[in-house]
Image (tube, rainbow, N blue to C red; front, side, top):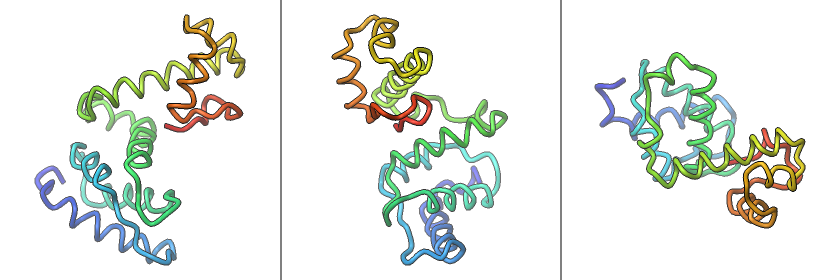
Length: 155
């Protein structure tokens, strides 16, 4: 797969067409430009079947026809956690940019604090050394919903 990165868009299109048939979708999903960028930055370790499987996973999880980069990024992170052997040799955080790195870190820290304190924002804010109002503001900006358990909050 590494030798065929220039064919990535064509390969993902074929994968999405196959996913449409296999999943019984009404329309063929498409990747937004951010998703294509994320996938092209990933150094695919395996063969084309690995890419097809991952793209089908995206097609199965998208809510609309266009697969947003936020879904691609979160699914790739989940996939890396499921396969630590692959993740060790793959993309560094900086491959996605500093802004994304900082966002990921902030989401992670907030999730950890909320989980550690059973979702109690006052205690979580105290442990993060920030005012509760700031925590609520950051949660809103980062898409971490108030009633959502910390481990389920989305990126």
